[in-house]
Every structure is written in C-alpha cells, then in structure tokens.
Length: 102
Length: 271
Image (cartoon, rainbow over all chains, first blue to last red):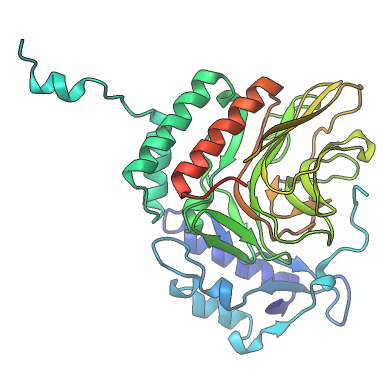
C-alpha cells in the first residue's frame, strides 16, 4: 500500500479538509482517502492515509480527479508532499484484537 | 376515424416513476451518462419493485455501475450519498475494492436504518470474486462485539449470511451472483442466491438470537470489526443493499428484477 503516514491529529485535519472541499461546493461527502490506524510495525500508533496513483486518478465526477480540486496541493502539502509517501504492508493496519466471526 | 396526434403519441406511453426520475437526475448531476435504454430499465425496476411489494423493505440500495464515484455513491431509495474510502476502482458495470484499504461507507447504522433484531436483510450482486480461498471478504456488513448481520465470501466457494447466531451461518456454495440474506423472525432466516443457472435457497427454522443495535455504519467491500475496518474485498460488486427482512417469494422477485436491471443497464451477464 502506498500513502502517507502521519499523526491522528493531522489525519483528522486532512480528512476534514477533503470533506469540506466537497460540501462547500454543495456536494455530498462521497469520497475520501480514509484513515487507517497502524497497529504493528515501526509506525504503530500513527495513522495511514492511502494515496497511490490509482486513487489520484479516480474519476470523482465528470472526469474530475482528486488532483483537480484546488485544495489538493494544500492538503497534500500538510502531509509532506507526494514525495513523503511510503509503502506500508497491509498487515500493519489490521487490528490483531478485532472481534471476528470465526 | 382520425386520432389526434396527441392521442397517437400518448397511446401506450407511461409516465416516469418519480423515484426513478429523482435517481436518474442525481446520477446525471454527478457526471455520469444515463442513456435512454437505461432510463427505461431503471423506471421499470422502480415500478416493479413497488408493485411487487419489497420496495418499502429496502433501506439502502446502491447500483455502482456508472464508472464515476459520485454517481456510484447515490442511494437509489433515499437519494443520499455514502462515502467511498481508500482504493476503489470505478469501472463500467461494477466497483472493486483493492483488498487493503478500499470500502464504501453507507453512512447509516443498524438502528438508523430502521432494522430490528428479527427483521433485517443484507446482500449484494457479486459480478466476479477474483480472490478464491484466501480468506474472508465482506460484501456488506458490520461486526460489533458479538452481533454480525452481513453477507460474506468464505473460503472461496461459499457466501454466508450471519445474523448473530453465535457465529452460525447460512451458506450457499456459489461464488458469484445475487445474494439476499434475510431474517423475518426469531426462527426464520433465509439466504437466496440467483445466478445464470437459476435460483438457490437455504433456510433456517431454528430460533436463534438475531443481530441488533450495531453502532457502526454498514459498509461494503470491507467490514467494521468493532470500529476498525477489516475483511477487505477485491470482488467486483454491481449492487449492495440493506433493509428489513423479506420472505423467499419477495427475495425471488427482487433478485430477478435486480438481474434484469444489471444486465440491461450494463450489457454484462449475471454469472
């Protein structure tokens, strides 16, 4: 998985910015990167925001992508810029203590 | 006898269902193209759903076939939008999670959707499930500490419907197609599957404790496990829904109508 690793506080602020970018234009909140707590590994305790090339190219509406929103540079900048993205193993966002049905 | 032009034009014409008109307008406003054939088929679906009698049982129904995130997020029943999270592909005819972060949040929990302990259903249209035998994936669902109404792909060969029941599930050995898991009583639980080969059902008549009062939102392509997302999916999904319970007869009709809607709007064939 490719994306940003950041603090819970910064993640919350970025996700709120994504929401505001949609709702301020009279749109519903229909897309977000989402944030995923990191449970294991060297980044345990922080939060992962996925943002790979496929997500960057998502057709949100009428051909517009997340990168076409004017707020995108600022929000990405708050996370350190695209070059700050890292690769994280999926296992690190799986809660080892989560309730299961098995 | 000469008929007026107005009469000739009006003969046989049907007015559009208002719910269909609202949904189509929302999808077009969201940047998706809805052609005249799709308009007709969507109208037909709403009409038959209402006349057959299961429409009022549906609380959320999504048809993510439009290739556009905003359009795919629209609920056909109430017109509100859920939220796509993480890596989700929006293709012509389906959406597909990336098995690691992608999922859809319906924005409503068990109580908010008007569901109750012995009266609920969940389900979806699985167009293709690519990952076989490598763990469980959620079609739609919710897990609280001990209660879980949802539909799952398990072990690569089965879909199962859980409604608490101490982890006991109804299962059907089909990987793709339309699945409806429905509970209409303490001892009435049904799982219906429709595929290209026809209809299959599995029912339970032993009284068990149904799921109730889950606080997390219903999601598709992954499942809230007590507030943390898990059971991520990479299945290609073309519909998912929640509602109050419906009996086998209504489930048979619903799956047939949904099959027609899917195939006629996408040009794809239900597996």
